[in-house]
Image (cartoon, rainbow, N blue to C red; front, side):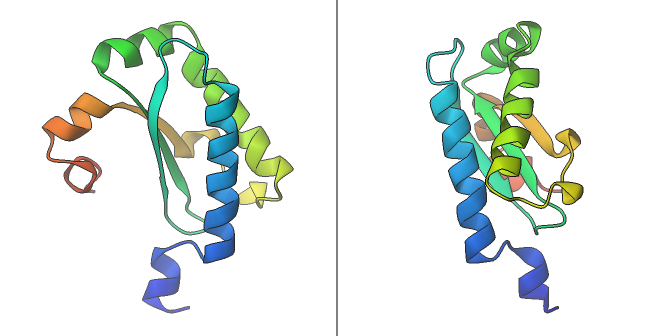
Length: 114
């Protein structure tokens, strides 16, 4: 497998992941605080998903209310229902961040830099 193949999801996998994340965003659209963005990257074997809340206070509230746990479970369910190979995915690969913190760090590339 080439580096490019290892670095990114193929178009079909990316479409499946985006459909699942869009489904989760629709299911949670009325929740407060709302998810304001989502991001998925990686390979089929190493998929990473991030959901962003507007700021640290919104992220804290979502966590305290159990919303992040519910969103993680909804995400796993949506991916499974759409045919994602679940043996390659765990809830630990779904994270939650503050959009304000990501922006303060200089954007996604700086914030998520390993």
